[in-house]
Length: 593
Ligand code: GLN
Image 1 (cartoon, protein in one colour):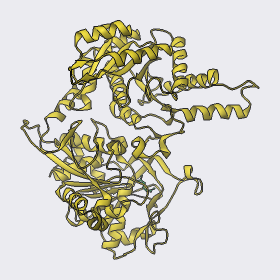
Image 2 (image 1 turned 90 degrees about the vertical axis):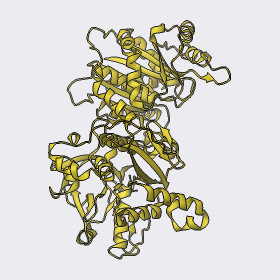
Image 3 (image 1 turned 180 degrees about the vertical axis):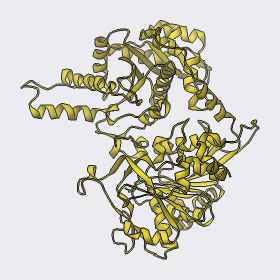
Image 4 (image 1 turned 60 degrees about the vertical axis):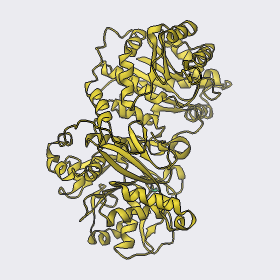
């Protein structure tokens, strides 16, 4: 097993996760099998209890692991399936050491950060690196390890010490350290400044780690003399210094690395030159270029709670992007803060109310993503009602499904107080109820989490066709509440068809509304399994419906989703008056991917 460690210096938010994923991808393109580990030096055992507002979305794995969103980047770039143990936190390491201490495994010794915590970190890395994640047998060739945070953080010290020992133990030729740093350009003089990187490498070296490769974030290519200066002060050969300059979309990052021969530097450091082939990135390249050429917009209104931080819905945005590219449309997200749609905002803040409704009414499709807590729920219900009544394509994910059922029960069944017991425990018409798996008392154990199977109830339904006419589909879950099975008959009689259920038939997984072009709700989270080259079926359905391609797509569904797309049209200039971030046009107040 060979190891690539990715560390970050100077500032956070340099895109270390995307860099680590891109490195994994180019190594995979060289014919190597790659796995990855993310180290998060925080004390939480996992990301499950962390607010998406503070830390970005909680990514969910097949095994039910609730992990850092970077694991989503790895899965999307490398198209593999990671395990919960591929995300190491300080909390997990301490928990394992303390459990051993209580068992008496340390035989009376004083338990210390060095060697016990540092040994536990190294053992964890070696054990997890050996788990196959690409569906093949046996361990991968290379494990990419990303160390979260910035060099110098107090929290990451035990990890740095452990990784220093680890690199010495596995030996040169088996370990390659890539340090991602920042080369700022001062606007006054327009000069690329190397000092922050110099200092950060100095810090790294003082902690016993020597970088093999420097990946410098900057607005433009580094000048040759800047590279030479960095080389001299950081003791890294010029050919091992690459620039990660700003690109139009993140799919260009692996191409940037390849063009600057980063793979050769890594393969040299790992003694893998003999076994690796030239990187094959044709499909990846054409998708990155296609994404830049798309000009015909598809506007999707995202109606949610955390509208100030796009990381909170990262996988949903990525899934929308994958589907839009597959449908040859330029994705334009309209962020609609759910609370602003509510009547109370009309009185308290009429401007916000108007702009929220304007955005919703201007959209080609409406998406209500998952969520917890009652803030904005009534606004989401209004959005679902608007989409249903005006025949706007709608996809409701988890909470987005539940609120659509509530809206249907209120408007069509006339059950005015219909609600989820999550929001109104005393409702007379509980159409969404607490249906946990596992413990009913222990907060950590009540969630239905990870991959579960959904069986299609009829072959002739939109979702079964979009999913390629299989009998079932496995998707990831993260919820406690579900549609009340006692109310299903009533809802179905009024036209809300539950086309996907679990094996018991008690858990409603998918609904579709008859007499509507695309009004679909899912209890699971399809966004977690969407990949750039394999867009999630129901997202493709939404974008296809929003761009007039759904009927054609359903007809072709038997022959596979990728066959039904229109040819690329030549680009021409469009001005949307929106912000362009990572290839996605965005409206509204959010920060965007
Ligand atoms: N709060 C809802 C539940 O627990 C929805 C969860 C979600 O959207 N992930 O069932």
